[in-house]
Length: 117
Image 1 (tube, rainbow, N blue to C red):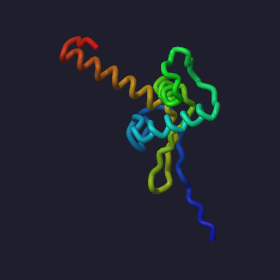
Image 2 (image 1 turned 135 degrees about the horizontal axis):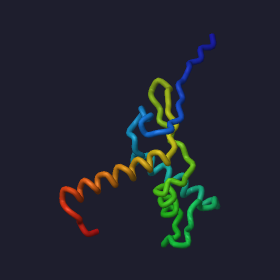
Image 3 (image 1 turned 120 degrees about the vertical axis):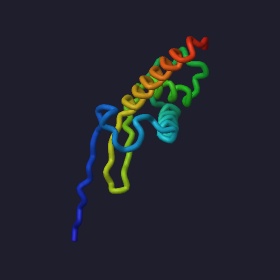
Image 4 (image 1 turned 180 degrees about the vertical axis):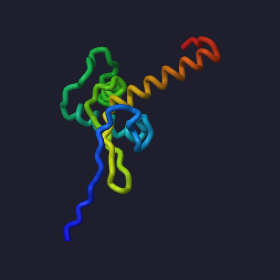
C-alpha cells in the first residue's frame, strides 16, 4: 500500500507571509549560514563582496559581512512536525531586521534624545 502525503511547500516573497517561526533570522540560522558560507569560502568559492576593505580577511568575517549585506542567495527551510515547510530567502529576513532596528533606533532617539555613538 503506497500512501503518499501531500506536503504544503511555499516560497515566501514577503515577511507578512511567514507563518513558521519568527519574521527574523534566529541565532541558530545565522550561525549555520555563516558557518556554511565560511566553509565555502575556505574551499575556494569567490566572495560576493569586495574584501579589499575588510580587515582581517578571515572567511568567517567575510561570511558575516555577506550575510549582513543580504547578498547570499540562500533559502532558509522552516519545517512543521506535520511535514509542511516554508522556504524563506535570507534577504527578506535581513531586510526585516534592518527595518526593525532603524525603527527601534528612531523610537529610542525620540525618547532619550540623540545619543552619541
